[in-house]
Image (cartoon, rainbow, N blue to C red):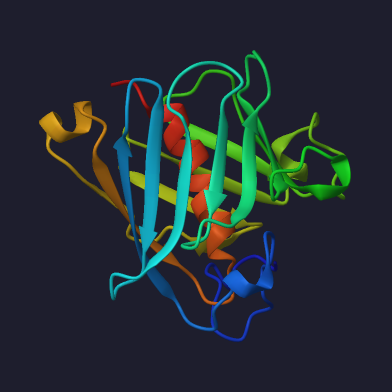
Length: 209
């Protein structure tokens, strides 16, 4: 993306399809994401459009190592699986299509940019990019956010593709019970399932109640 020409993905730009092109819309999308803890070890996310229609749901482990989260459509069909990869200074996740673990079904890999940081910052690598262990300059996408700055933004090169106006709606009581909401703006032609998966993994790094 040429610098100083465009800083935000717009109508008419090429589609960014990471999970599937069925999740790319030709117009901006405003999504409501609701998160709640179901019991001590599990939490649940639901994603709604402005009309209140359920689009996606995500279940998984709220705490522990080698966590796994599964994204499903409203009918319960598995779209993708997010798996945390062991103990490391930089938190790392691999995301596969469906419930697969096979390398050929890998959709993308997410890794913390820095081992220690005051806010969450992650680099995203597509399967054809073999530079996961190199610097963040080689990543395909970059995302940052967290409660410290009440924001979540995703970039492709210098162009913002999602996250404008993300907010958290919670009271301290509901927050410490694991219930809070996100409002997410996804730019035109951007895969919203990809963006929601990133949000869940970034949010996972920030959970402490």
